[in-house]
Length: 134
Image 1 (cartoon, one colour):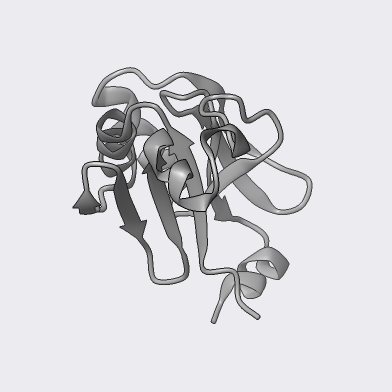
Image 2 (cartoon, rainbow, N blue to C red):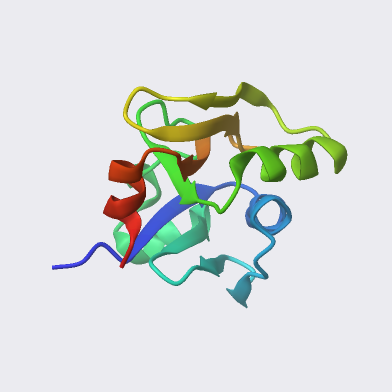
């Protein structure tokens, strides 16, 4: 089994897709006005509108902008460089500037327009770096 995708449900697909394109530098694939994907070499961040919930059995199975448990994480080459780029390209709601964590990652934590937590991180210990080598 492989985890290949995480889907975020939103009331504003275009706004959230534009945000993730801006922060990741990855152009989204927009399949419809209700569904887009940010594809990385390892996994995909899918962005679906609330209208897509009808295809899964009903609008009440998920609620946009109510996540308080998951953090969407992206491995980046240099989190400090990414932080400077994002800081200079407009405001992002930063929760924590780049900080070295006890488990060996240097992490930048911020929120997307729907309030979801996003972590950009770079391994800084040899053990952690080895873990992410394929």
